[in-house]
Length: 161
Image (tube, rainbow, N blue to C red; front, top):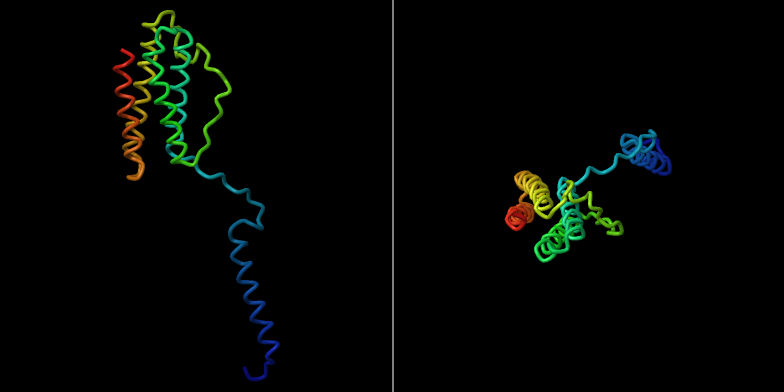
């Protein structure tokens, strides 16, 4: 550049580079005081919560009616396994199981095992429907997992008959 010293050209280049770097940052809200948006919840999060809820309902039914333990324990364990796998896939952390399920978690008054099984069947149907919907909306890499959960919930309906 005629008439410009080498030092002046380097200073100008550095200034242009600095303005370019910080100019991009000002557009992202870093200097504008905007709060960061929380990441969107994973679409499979409700399915995981539903699996944990169903497991708690089965545990409460077992606590209220120990005679149903052999029939219901495998279903409760299946729901916990589904929740664990969904947590792994979504990167979520499962809540700790410190709180025991209350009899109200069974989903109804449940004065006898027939009523409890009816309430569990209704909850399982709702869970199956939610899993079917999630399967239809899931990306291909998650559809097989969600489809197996929907199928398992359909078989659970037969067990709690």
